[in-house]
Figure 1: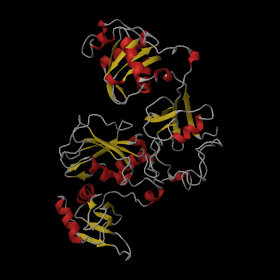
Figure 2: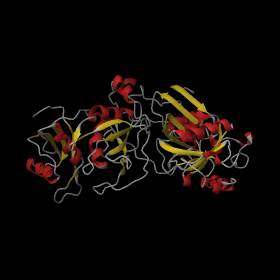
Figure 3: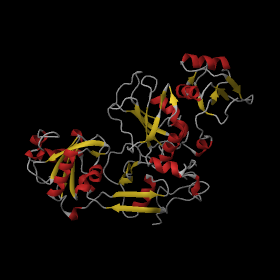
Figure 4: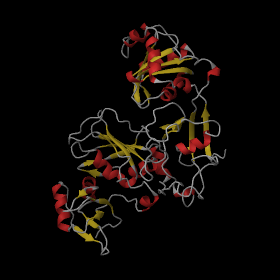
Length: 484
C-alpha cells in the first residue's frame, strides 16, 4: 500500500468483543453472579484467597480514562487474556485469563508490589465467577470483529486520522478512528465517543462534527517533521499515501499539511530523557506559580496542550506539549533554572498524556488544570509562526513585541511594579515604520533570574489602551543579545 513506516504491527485482537456499549457491559456485570458481594470482599491487606481461585480477576482503582487496551498491555505479562469487561462508572473491570495460573500470578503480584495501569496503581482480587458473561454471539467467530487495534512503532512521519483512513478504508469502510498514546502509537477504528473531527479522532458517520480550524488544531501525535526529512519535512508536495480517487481526502495544493521545522535535539541529550510529550516540573513556588504562568514560560519551546498540578505532590505539575522534541527543548533550557527563589526540576514524565482528574484550587485561587490546546498564544501552530521562534536559553535580556506605540518606558516599568516583579535596568526600542500598529524592543535586567520571573508573569499580558477596541497581547521571549 506504499506505507512508509519502519514497523507496522497490526493486531486483529479481541478488543472488538470488548468494545460493546457501556450500558450493555454494565448490565452484563450486574448479571455476573456474585458481583455485588464481590465488591465487598477483601482487598490489599486482607487475605485474597478467601475467594476461591478463578481465571477471572476483579480489578479496582482504575483511572477514568482507562480502556481495555490499557488492561491488556499491563496484565498480559501474567499470561494470555481472553476477555475484558469494563465497569467505567465504578473505575473497575473484570479480566478473564485463559488459565487460572495466570490469574494467580496477577493477584499475587498485585498483593506484593504496585501494579500500574495507565499510570495509576490498581488492585486485584479473584472474582467469584469462573467466566465473564459475554454479549450475545461474541463467542461466535462468524459474528464478526469490527475492531482493529493498530500498534505503530518508529513511524517516519506524523500519524493522523487521514493517514489511517487512507490505509484502512480501501479494505473496508471505516466508521470511526481514535488515536491514543501509549507505548508507541495505537489507534482503534471502533465504536467510540468522538466529539470532534481532527487529527486524533474522527467520526466518518458524522461529518458535521466541529473540526478545529486550520493552524489552531492539535498537532499530530509526533508533532511535525524535523527539517532533516526534506526541505518541507515531507519531501515533495504530494499526499503522504496514495489516496482513492473518489476520496474526499484527496489533497489539493491548499490541503497539503503545513510543516514546522523544529531543530533536532542532540541525540545524546534526547536519548537520556526517554520519549514522551509530557514533562514533569517540580520545585514550583506554591503561591506564585499556576497553570498560566507555566504556559508563559514553556510556550517558548513548543506548543502547550495541557497543564495540571499534582495534588499528591505539592509544587509539581505535568505539562503536555506538542511532541517529545518540545519536551526535550524545555528540559535542555529550563531544567535547574531559578524562578521565585526555587530551582525547577524538569524531566520527562512516565505519563503519555495529561488527564484532567482530581482538579482542585491552587493557593492563588486558580484551577489546578487548564487546557491550552486551542489558545492563540501557542507559537508553533504553523510553519510561519514556528519560523519566527528562535530557540534560546534564558538570558538577562528580554525581547518584547506586539506592544501599542503609545506605551512608554515608564509605563512598562510601572507594569513590572504593579505585578511585583523586578524592573529592567536598560531599555531599547526598535525603529518602526510610521504605519506600524505595534512596536518592539529589548529589556535588560540585573540577572537572568529576574528576566525569567518577568517573562513568567507578564508574557501574554493584555494591554488595554483608551478608546481601543481590542487589547494588545504583550509577547516576551529571551533575546539572543547578552546585554544592551
